[in-house]
Amino acid sequence: MSDKAILEYGGERYEFPVIKGTEDELAIDIKTLRAATGMVTIDPGYKNTGSCESAITFLDGEKGILRYRGYSIEDLAEKADFLEVAYLLIFGELPNKEQLEKFHNDIKEESQVDEEMKKILDGFPKSAHPMGVLSSLTSALVAFNPTSVDVSSESAMYNSIVRILAKFPVLVAWTLRKKKGLPLDYGDDTLGYVENIHKMMFKRPNQEYKKDRIAIDALDKLLILHADHEQNCSTSTVRIVGSSHAGLFASLSAGISALWGPLHGGANQAVLEMLEAIEADGGDTKKYMAKAKDKDDPFRLMGFGHRVYKNFDPRARIIKKAADDVLGNLGIEDPILDIAKGLEKEALEDSYFVDRKLYPNVDFYSGIIYRALGIPTEMFTVMFALGRLPGWIAQWREMRLRKEPIGRPRQVYIGENLRPFVSLEKR
Image (tube, rainbow, N blue to C red; front, top):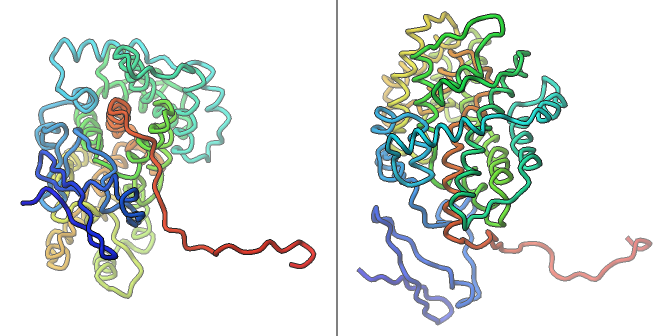
């Protein structure tokens, strides 16, 4: 096979190198396209454009494969915890016991958030969307940590990474507790990373905190499953903002804003809003399955199928069991969750959905789990951001270490040609 791609236009012939990834993905390297031909490509949404070479995450949507640094998502979700996966994504290898213990201890040392941050949080009304609050608080961290990261220094990079991994869960917990009207909590250094997140979020001021192993394990798995997903909208945002040499915290804040959108991180919130709408209309799942199959009906069945995974979402298979465990353990009687289980059962048995591979995806199950754990719907995307944090960090770190150029997409101009200026009196 030729390692060149040939472009012929206007009687001229141009050659461009073809590069091959470690999983045999092929790409045409068009870095010299404009210089050689005067042309650019047009690719709305960048669906056919590779913005970088990356060694972090491999995704094959046709085969339902997701791997972090070469490890299957199935193995990681079953055998590792979230902090191990965060270390793997960021630094490239699974930590040994000593490395993991140091990593966790260093995070605990940085877990205090400046008390003045509470004043910023107090400035938001309770009606503020948690994603807006989280993005603002993350950006505000820059004011309390004003020095830029020296990316040529391993220790400076490490310290910045540890700092945000320590403080971000506190900001997430504070955002939830403000929403619920609860006093702010710093957690407990004697707990594991995810256990501490659970405590900071859910401890009642007048009750002793009790570990819920099934809830913590489900949360741990959800965070792992959301930890990275290749060059999606928010990850690309983190990389392109960071390419201007903006700092880590500012780049992460931009990623949070990108994740906020309902077409990206807000999908699991949209699932619950759909379920609530079905309940308000009487809870007839068969009626809504019929509406979903009617091409002339504007109703969309949220949480089924996936833009990338054309066969099945490997994360959904893992989290389905966790959802079943949580619902079984808590014994919750909730008509919304009953509707969800009814939709799932009908979709898995209906040939219309089976033939089109419209299976429940990770957003469907994650929304169910978050609701069962008592997390408000508006907080679902915040939980997504908490899980995606190590992936964003890894992508930002890789981009800076590879010295990637500042992101600057081209365009094809379709506006007016040169026009003479008309004075105000004659318009």
